[in-house]
Length: 313
Image 1: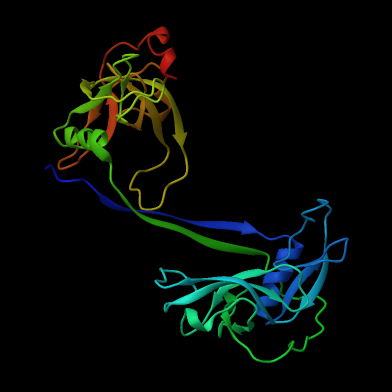
Image 2 (image 1 turned 180 degrees about the horizontal axis):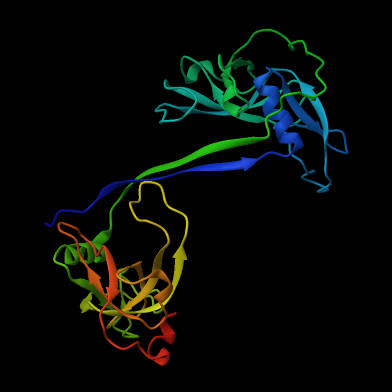
């Protein structure tokens, strides 16, 4: 039985966003150990606050302080915390309706086990030792036997307010390409490009998908395409990507390999970026030990006529 191909993959990027007046006050309040909500036109207090009433869509800015104590409305036990979660030991995800609020806030509850958690239990905020104006300023919730905590009487106005945040998004997963794409990857190791032909519409898909998305039937017939192809469309990249050792500007394009029924993407080099054009005939350039072409360069053939690739745009 052939070995199943698989590889760990990570998608990660920092997401920078500005804050409106309500979110700014909420996060700045957390930094100062104050929890703020916002009051709607019908008198409900929403925590976390939003800038527009979810019922009427009216803008709302009436900030209201609520207590750092509350009641668990529902919960789920997390027996295996993952990287980046609030606690590194097993904990409960809880929805907590803080005293003075009409909606619930999602966060972690530090509890010794699921038997110690119940709907209706009282909890309070455990503040992080170092706070910067983020939801993580609430380290977690913890069980609490007392009544409603005393409010500070804060108006929601801060001199040194937080106006923007950077959220680090990351997704870790294991990818297995399956039969069709595994064959495609193995062919690339031999510096060949192979697709699969649909037995119904006869279109050759590169990379192959194992089934024709148009006809809905399985594809098994392998077809070698290229190695030369035609640039169908392209863009000029002017912003240098992190960890990518390519000087800007450079060109990234869609390339219809000869014999393929759709275009794949690749970098186009060996020519000034302002000379790349639709219809340009190109060939792959491989580097030692690479499992895919480093880029495509002009092969010296005359440009392809538009009618030969217009259906592949």
